[in-house]
Image 1 (spheres, rainbow, N blue to C red):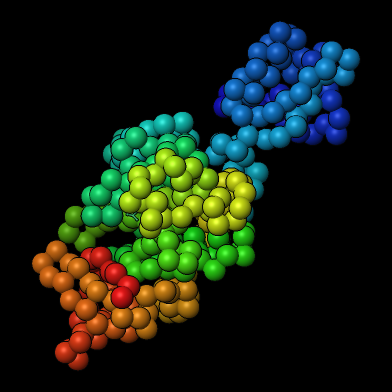
Image 2 (cartoon, rainbow, N blue to C red; image 1 turned 30 degrees about the horizontal axis):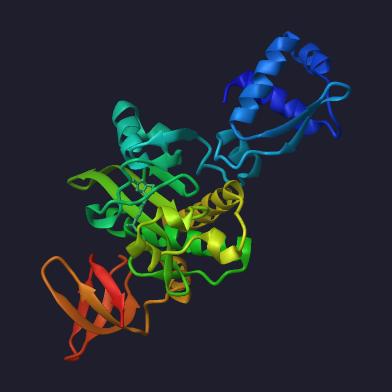
Length: 326
Ligand code: BTN
């Protein structure tokens, strides 16, 4: 969104009633036809603005798009989301983040959030495709971690807790975490996270936390097999949700937990993760790259690994893989 459009928008937002084009033009030192052009642009961006010859323009409803200007108004963070890049459409926000990190100093990008209204090549865990049509929240948080390498995987735990908490606070829905990094409502997935690290030896250049939330994704845009296992917030809440408010809340909740990680308060995150887990104390089947087995999920350790008591009584630690509730 260009500055002139934002300036016109601000005048409309601040005015309790309609404002004439003449007044806006005067206030901004631009022509009335320039005002009209900006009104047209704002409408194109999803703002509903009524106009009457006698009274002027009035902002009826704001856009539901995830514009930095809108997010900023609601954001209660110090670092996370203080820099935002927004795209109408991109292949993957993770890919954009990698490009930005390669072109600049990741230190300066710490906390930046890259957002897309839709992704044409979204990537999920284990290299799977991630369906990302308009209506979802597709975002990547770029981090220059100061967390020790062996605890870095807890970033996904912090992110999972943040999304589950945000959904609970915004809608009063009991969202739970399924190991390793899925958010569930009932027995359907509503969100997923993906942590990618750019590291060599013991130096982490940057970390990317990808967040995908099926907020207002139309269910009929999902393939029939996804429709059996996935839900959307819109379907659960019974109305379109305010994606801007939710994302601002997720970023706030994430910042709080990421701060705990940086402060070495690993126990707090593990405790909170456990209290929100739908995996622990359940019988599960685990599928890793080289084997499949079942047992009881009894614990999670401080590296994010799931601890399984196998059917033969042996204890197994699983770092990566798929987990199916039995
Ligand atoms: C999963 O459950 O498999 C993780 C899904 C992560 C998807 C998000 S959407 C934003 C970011 N960009 C991507 O291409 N993937 C992540």
